[in-house]
Length: 471
Ligand code: NDP
Image (cartoon, rainbow, N blue to C red):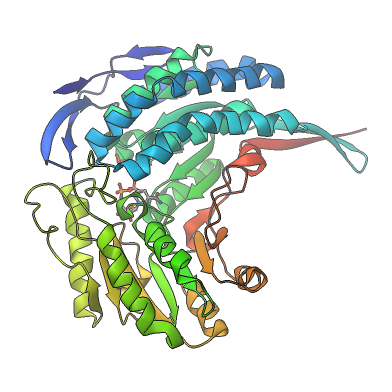
């Protein structure tokens, strides 16, 4: 049993004043594997006070000093990639195909940000004014359970680069991963108070942080519903907010797409992180002229997406994070059938041969209309919808007919055609064919997928305020 009874404030692992405990589970076995003692509002206030004390000195550090800190953070996090892997597998059930990307990347985000910082000009002229980009003050990061240490490191790297101090409130469901990543960050030897990590409930610690008068910036990743309430909490004190919220991303297969490239990519995009991903490509837009062929290719290829023990290298889809999440995904699989969609693969219940664990069958619905709830709401599980379109204009219209706008994929043999389509998609990022992730490209959403951007210079500037001096 893991007992996690410390939070991290002012450079030290300390006992929370909060005395509530939450259980930790292994989602692949449903067994309790530990408990975590939760912070409360008093702890949240102590963390903000520490970040506030650290801010004046930290905000005046030089670019070179902060690049050095980012390099140290990279080294400290990268030294524990194996521990991060074990914690994520045990507590979250992520399969290797996800961890192999996310565990090494936890460290490299600090290097990516150091690169951005090196070339960034904090002072510039605008007309007759001297403009200086100043750090925003004490920042708060609120992170979810679906990619715990990646979100923590990504948000912290931008704050460090900007010279802002930070209080981080991760999900209590990820306490094991938070413990390992906090030890890594501590080992980098930054001055006390620059970052503080307080695990606790959103309605307790989150609420205290998002209304605190000494906090000037909030960066949040999570559901659109919680994002909305955080924006409201932040409004009275005009905190700056970056919101990275839900998605219902389209994968548009054009009629000239090479299906040998498109089909594996479409499934990888849809089942990414076991479907528990805001960026998951959950709506597969298919030309009517090739509908039968694509249906057949998908129903064949989906068999390779095995759900099961995350320690098995062949497994591509791990369990849902909790019973609640499993129930939620099951309810959507039921709903899809009630709405008249047809199961092309998967369905309700656990995959064959699995009797325990919050496993879901990788599921594809066909005959889906874009006005069905399974095509409109974020399911956050491995459940995809195949939707047909008549022509390019129809594809674009369906792709944009959503309240979200986080990411999209376009598949075509003609790059110029794909780019023309991409330019008409209302989404923060559009990938063409098998284009790789680029850590310098902005990340964030249009519409109710949020606002503000992360990564690269866009992520750095989210923690900066311009001050103009005119003489
Ligand atoms: P939430 O959005 O509720 O949680 C994300 C984070 O916000 C957690 O740390 C949570 O803390 C915190 N939080 C919750 N309420 C508040 C509040 N009032 N003030 C400040 N912080 C708060 O996600 P859930 O875990 O409840 O998941 C529900 C659904 O959200 C999923 O099914 C999925 O659709 C979506 N989701 C989207 C994610 C994304 O990456 N875009 C990530 C996770 C979920 P606590 O855990 O204590 O509640």
